[in-house]
Length: 455
Ligand code: FES
Ligand code: FE
Image 1: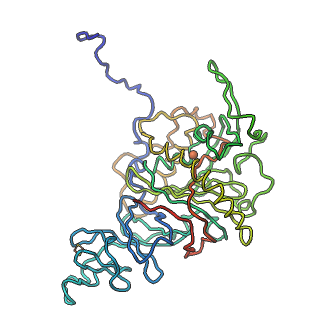
Image 2: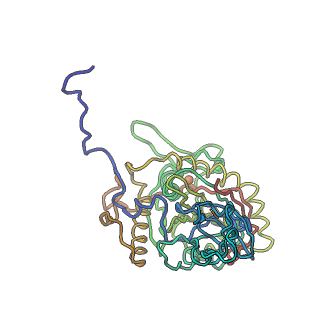
């Protein structure tokens, strides 16, 4: 088959190579492989932070968490003497942590060198060197750390939490799970309009509930959130030359006739008053720096995508029920008996699988990917504002294209925002942990859910 110079010689790749070759349209997003700095991130369950220092990596930053006198502290996890992780050490004095190698001892609130055990009380380095400390808060039963852009003061964490979790009483269950794949793939998967109805059609969580075939969805911004608003839900379709496709089955419930935007299986008889009061325009919403909210009539599921490094993230899934008193028992029973295994387990595992094997760019986006491009546009804009406020320079790359459309997105006219409707809870959820009680308080109950720490 070999020939000389001729017709079979490899052709130069034409520039008609399909799709988007890179993420240059979103330079901040493209550069955020290890996460957006300047935000709070949940690290681990509060109950797991004790007087024994433990190691974590967030946004590529190695930190150690330790609790002293009831307060959690975060320090850079590297002794400036010879680079040994402070998480290998322990406490020799109250309010400090000591490196295991030569006993350099650091003050927890300030990170300053408080004593050097093996150099005696007159050590001249005392007070002159130290390690970086990080702002710490506790919410939702978890310890959150602020990863700074530079040396700015952190914004209040409550400004970053879903608004309804700041003042309302609730119970929750959740899971923190180290997963493979870049955090952006996890975040995009969570808000991805097209995947749930196909990928999750086999989930046990959907065993008795059909998933739509395709939807028409709009992306609606409100405040710092983007909402997916479903305008049309199609439960079956004839594909020319291929055949008919539907997820309807004889053993599943009949699909609802109307289109709705709370929950995903039909209009609810009643909606929890706290949830109803939020007047959410759609059941799936997303905000910086990667917070997903999926609203059902009687509970809300959240996902926080926490960057670890370019190839790993922590999946933090939380199921919240806005109830108090005896009704919390019903939530615990439901969570521990079903949700934890079906939704936060197998269903969410399908997402983990996809996130781990996604490899983009290049990519050829299609109409439902308006959910992805809208999120990238939002993050680009929000992060640009944050950098400007911090006086940081924008990335060298050119300015972001404004609202880059999904590749196959219908021209302007088409529902710029069409997106899915109805579909199933596209979003995965964690499982595992056990519920926490009214966690929004500043010092959430340690008895929260649990989590697995990074390895
Ligand atoms: Fe930490 Fe020597 S390396 S005290
Ligand atoms: Fe999903």
